[in-house]
Amino acid sequence: MKMDGKTVLVTGSTDGVGRYVAARLAAAGAKVLIHGRDKARAETLAAEIKREGRGEAVFYQADLSSLAATRQLAEAVIAGNQRLDIFISNAGIGSRTLGAERRTSADGHELRFAVNYLSGFLLAYLLLPLLKASAPSRIVNVASLGQHPVDFDDVMITRGYSGSRAYAQSKLAQIMFTIDLAAELEGSGVTVNSLHPATYMNTTMVREGGITPISTVEQGGEAILHLAVGDDVAGKSGLFFNGMQQAQANPQAYDAAARRRLRALSLELTGLAAA
Ligand SMILES: NC(=O)c1ccc[n+]([C@@H]2O[C@H](COP(=O)([O-])OP(=O)(O)OC[C@H]3O[C@@H](n4cnc5c(N)ncnc54)[C@H](OP(=O)(O)O)[C@@H]3O)[C@@H](O)[C@H]2O)c1
Image 1 (cartoon, helix red, strand yellow):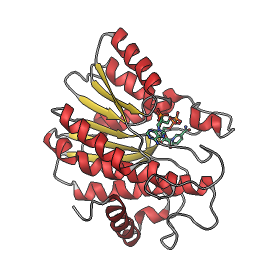
Image 2 (image 1 turned 135 degrees about the horizontal axis):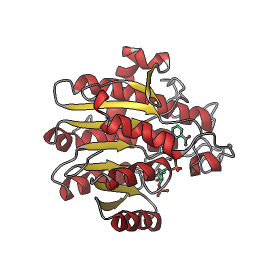
Image 3 (image 1 turned 180 degrees about the vertical axis):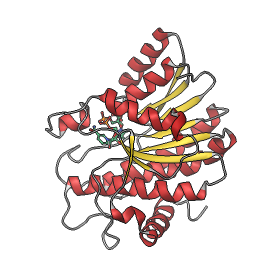
Image 4 (image 1 turned 45 degrees about the vertical axis):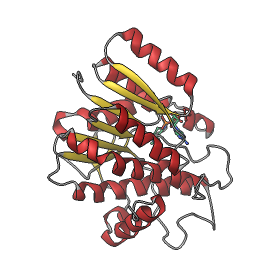
């Protein structure tokens, strides 16, 4: 992997699989835009990258449970960088993060939908001009095999809430968005794919859910890197991968009418519809 001269944004790279991916990309020579809320953990990673003496790390602190903060992150990335070759939308919260009860974002949206999906949707659109100007470029949406259809009568899950349903809905939404965005970006030189990195990696999200890990961050990280830089996926777009293999997502992902509804709702909720 040779990443000299390349700039990569990895959201949620202060911890877990994102941290692994950011460190690997920097070790290959990339300028890595590391992101998260936790400054202390970001500084540890930045120091590690500096010690390695290859690529560069710049920290962007932003809470993706706020659309305003998400917009500020995009603005800061655009203001501080001449190019963006890869955007890895990885930040996320698990099915049991912050407990079992339903929570909402700063904008009043169901929290998992907001952090895991809506913020990545907004970031992708705001960063598209920079990604297009840097083409060929790639977007990787880190989703999951845990997928639940979006109930358009109750997208914010005000009835029958469970953390795992909310998590799985947000992850399928990412996959549906990936398919639509790929179609929209055809011919632009920007590709977008989504994946399930690995099952129950040994990360904070899994441990705080009380789940015994069965995969390593290295396994999931290599699957993310495959979509980010792999030669065999160059030019491929709109696909879902389970680890290293192309796979089928939940049937709702292939329902064009459902995707249209989700897209219209997401444009409205993020304020992009009015732009
Ligand atoms: N672990 C698994 O087995 C597994 C399986 C399938 C898919 N995934 C997906 O892989 C991705 C990474 O998960 P992980 O297991 O590596 O999780 P993790 O170790 O818990 O790390 C999550 C990352 O997201 C950031 N983050 C969380 N909430 C945020 C917020 N409100 N604003 C900004 N950043 C936020 C965290 O940074 P701060 O704490 O610094 O904010 C951290 O860097 C997620 O999208 C997850 O759904 C994981």
